[in-house]
Amino acid sequence: EKEQLEAQSLRDNRLEIVGHTTTGFLHDLNNLLQIFVAGPEVLRKCLEDHFDTVPTEAMRILSTMESTGKRGAEMCRQLQAFVRGANGVTRKAVAPEYLLTELGALLRNSFPKNIRLTFETAPGTADVQCNTTQIIQLLVNLAVNARDAMAGGDGELYVTAQNAKLSVYGR
Image (cartoon, rainbow, N blue to C red; front, side):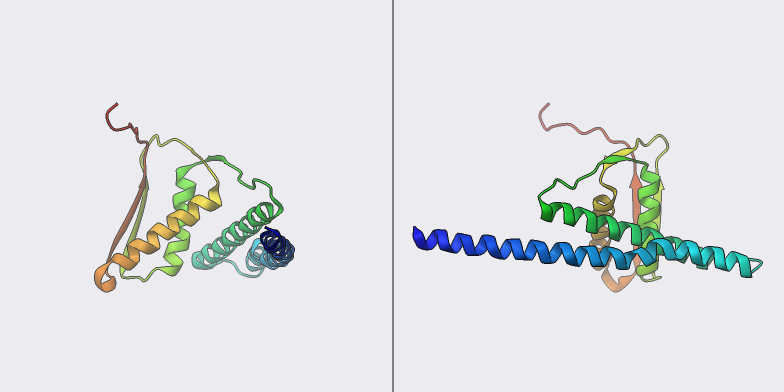
């Protein structure tokens, strides 16, 4: 029993050290991500001041950098809250169009061109109560799994959002 208590005490101490180290790491990582949050706005302004027309592709890349930086910073905040013992889960009403737009931006920059991507939201689709970062991570993981399952690397990934009525079997 004494050995078990000592072993548990050592595990608790290790977890506390890992928690402190993780919190410091996440703080530093969040600071590094701020260049992706603030930088695109500065670059947009600079480009608009120096060029008559800014290529749409450049503006799209800057928007993707900004939204990715914000998502990364949100992930850091959630993990910090978890390490500190707080809930860290914030839910809010999010338009499905926003979720699919963000997903599309991430996938178009990382998926091969021979995979056609289609995103659609059915008219009247209700907002989703969710943690935006977690839902987008989930959708990206599902999309990557779908991409990996495409034989030969060619195919189409079709993602749609629509209202659905769920029922429990037998009721």
